Amino acid sequence: MEKFIYNEQQTRGKNYSRWKNMNDSEREYFNEDILTEEQAVKIFDKLFPESNYKEVKMSDNWRKGTIWDKNNWSYDANGMPINGDKDE
Image 1: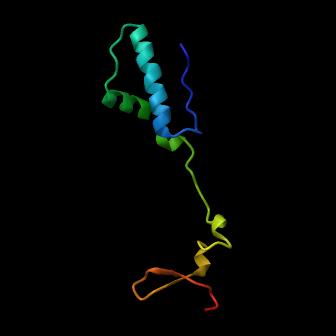
Image 2 (image 1 turned 135 degrees about the vertical axis):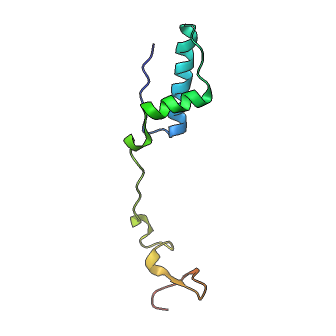
């Protein structure tokens, strides 16, 4: 049987689907009951807790020099952002 390896390049959902398909196949091969979705999710979460896998952290550096640069924004009386140059 193929060993499941969590792929951090894939979403958690895709990893779960791959694991569930492999688990189902293995259980069928050994004439065992297929796990319900609820059972499978509980086991997957125990085997592969979300906190063990990298979190996507993104800085705001990509905003520099674009209209999304937070330093170029001002706010109206209602607190809504208005795009504009700092010198205006």
